[in-house]
Each structure stands twice: as structure tokens, then as C-alpha cells.
Image (tube, rainbow, N blue to C red; front, top):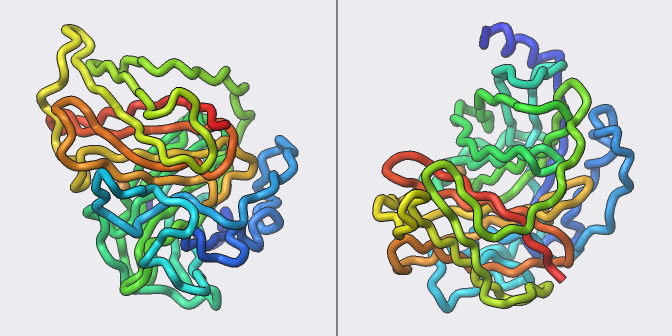
Length: 317
Ligand SMILES: [Cu+2]
């Protein structure tokens, strides 16, 4: 079955496009090319593009091991290792032409320079060569995958899209000797997307055996302000701090934040790193939010080998 699917790659390029980006460094980070190239896969929501931030981008990688005094997650140009003037890589997705919900599909992602030449050397960061965050455009579906590197710039991964509608894939990688990049690719899954559920701003939720309380350093989060986010993890049953937290991809936890937006772009994506040396059962992150709006957060933690994904919404003013 996989082979069959692979064969369809040739005729079935789901999209393209890609961009960029070195946070904060691109003269026009929002990418040329997206909307029109994706036209045939557009969502049908007909939403006009939002104005996009030209000056800041979800923060990556400049400082992989933030310390408590380190404002990370970064926005706004404090990226010492990201001074490239032309962040010019792109990701191209090959996927079956007609993806059905809840069906395994093989995806291939080709990383190229702007001229279409494969980039073939990558560096490992957070234990992987590529981190792929897949979200449905309504932000209800979230997956964190690690495609396998083949050769010649090509990564492969088996995916499964649980609901119909449009999806955005944030591929996060680090070409050898260069800054971490995030390229955005999109695809569409056959069928009508479910209606958008209401946004739940509750800060205490239970995920399986784990109750998670999310607290922020400020009562009201404002655009551009450094914000501490604390995930307090307890056993759902006895409300005691969990004692089985393990390192996940080299850190106490991972946090992906995406701004509700249409279309989603790399500027809407923030990957924050956990602070070290925080109390048992607590995982802390520091970031800032580049624009006002609604953001969805997914904190991921390893409890004795099992990944807990804790999602929340937050309003930023
Ligand atoms: Cu990852």
C-alpha cells in the first residue's frame, strides 16, 4: 500500500510553497508565492489574507538552551545567529492527489534552495533532523512528527489526517551551517471541514491521567511582552505533582504556539523551549507573542515514555 501511494507522488504534487524563514530577518517574510501556488488547494473558506507581520517571526532556534534570563521564543530581532540576509530555502510536498481522512498516506518533503536545487546536509537539533508540525487550519488537529531523511534533500513520513479540510505543515529544519528554518507547506483532505468549535480559554484541563494547569506571568498578555508560561502537571487522580517526567527531545518539554490566522504562515508559528531546572511537575517556557489575537498552545511532555499533549487557547491583546 505504501508503494502504491509512493507511485502517485509523481503525478500528485499537493503543493508547494514554502518559505523561508529566518525569523525576523527576511525583508518580506511572508512569502511570495503562497496563496497563488496553493490556489487549487485552497480551503474554500474564502478568507482574505490577513495583513502579515513583516518584522517578526516565531522564534526558533537562535538559542537552543535558554536560561531563565533569556528571552526566547523569540521575536523581534534578537537572534544573534540568524543574521542571514537571504533566507532562501523552500519545502515542496509530494502527497497523494486525493487524501482521505483517517487513511495512512506517505508524504515526501523536498528541501531546496530558491533555485530548486536540493539541500542535502542538515544538522540535528532537538535530537532530530526535521520536526514537522501538522495542524488543521482550524487548529483542532495537531501532530508533531519526525520525517526520516532519505537523501538529496528528501524527507519522508507516513501521516494520517483525521478530519477533512485544509492543513498546514510547518517543517522545521537546520541546513548545515545555517540557522534553523521553518518552511510552510499546505495540503487538503477530501471532504467538508467540520464546523469550528468554540475556543476554550480554560486554563485547567485533564489529558488522560494528567491534569494540567497553565499559568501566565501576567494576568493580561500583551503583544510583544516577554511572558512566562508555567505548565503545572499533576496526576489527575490524586492531584499530586507528577514524578515521572522524562526529558523529551532533550528538554523538559516542548511548546508549539500558533496564531489563529488565515492563511497560516511561518510568522504565525512559535516554538518555545523549556527552561531548565524548574520544580518537579512544572515546566516553564518564556516567549512573546508578536501580534494581538488568539493563539493555540500545545505543550508536550514525556511521562515515563508516554507523550502528553496539552492544548490551550490564549488571548493576546
Ligand atoms: Cu520534533
